Length: 215
Image (cartoon, rainbow, N blue to C red; front, side, top):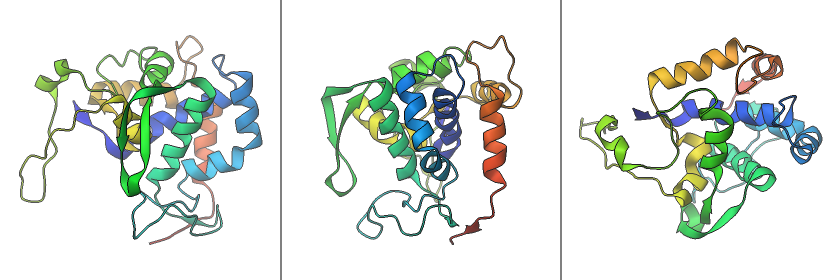
């Protein structure tokens, strides 16, 4: 088991496309919101929103170019999508809360429960979580720095998950992630979570835009 980082962007992105598309789990509020804001969703999913990766003094939370004109990786864009998902489908907890980049205050949400119910459990991803559980310690692969030293183990609270889940906070295994990829690339009508052709076709369409990298 490992922290998947940017690989988990696709898990959140696919759930949002299904939520706002033709999934039976779509709500009328979610469908209306993403219909009205589809270009914003597309630009964030494709990293062409103009938002920075993670806010900092050197890279404040500003849109640095006209959305859709350039490519620039953005973790903050996915954090924005996560907050919209919580607004449409969940709720913010009164505690725990934490302070993050540039004194950003974030309180816990039920985002983990939403993803467990709507994506991870239906796809039998039983070893995938956004919140820390002590039972995971024996199976976790630690990240290492440039000198090969293991990095400190971060045990995500619901506040940490509210800040980082969508931009890289999924703990999963290769087998579980393969189940997700199969469901997206080859969805079946009987799948518990219906990753419809809408999700797969939309991702293909997104990749074919005429966008230059901003590097």
